[in-house]
Length: 318
Image (cartoon, rainbow, N blue to C red):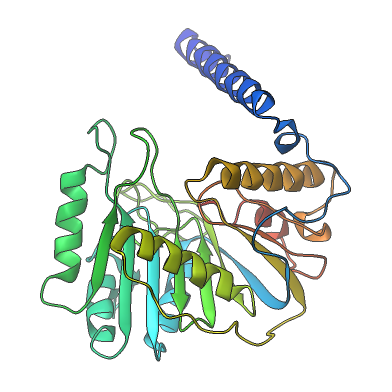
């Protein structure tokens, strides 16, 4: 049965909007002399960025929240010095572990903050309340998280009116980082969803994250420290990069508000997508990219195997 007139009209309008946006950005990049961001040279293996490729890393792809969130909770429980988190939104009542003994995020962080430094950066919310979360909703969420605890949580409002901070990272002791697309919230969809995505009463969520060990963790940690200092004026003490933990070479591509950094991330994403489209898994190529926010990661052959190898091109969407 063919699609309804409404569906065809919706698709037509959507395609038109997509084409207009692509044309606008192509003209803008051309005007700025950044055509290469859309068509990067195939011979370029790594992005031209302040953070070079780091050898000796280990990267594991985690598909969907039911796999990723319990691992994040376990790693946070083992923290010895600090836990630094960035996110689009965070919900104190969100359950990282489900079942007979659920583990609630706010309670976990509150307990950990009694013995380690716990800092959280979240987007301040939409300044124009036309899409969630509103600034009032974020303010309430932050108050629920920190009330009666030693958790430090700051709201970052520094963005254009129709943009938002979409970074999702967790850095633990400067030794382990989680980077990906899974927020610690159930706002707009429950991030704890198994890969089978069974039917249920509430909206599920299909996404991915990665766990990272090795020298590249320092780049994720430094990015958090940079954002924290810009927002609060407080400099965080750095640590030397952790020792090698694997056989991969990984590059972290940061895309803060600086337009040049965003264009570098775009070039990395396009390069990885082109290689995957050509029939090669992103992990078969020297670099794999991601969309926006913190970072794109690149890894050579030998990265995680299995049916989700190709997902590495989007694992680090922030």
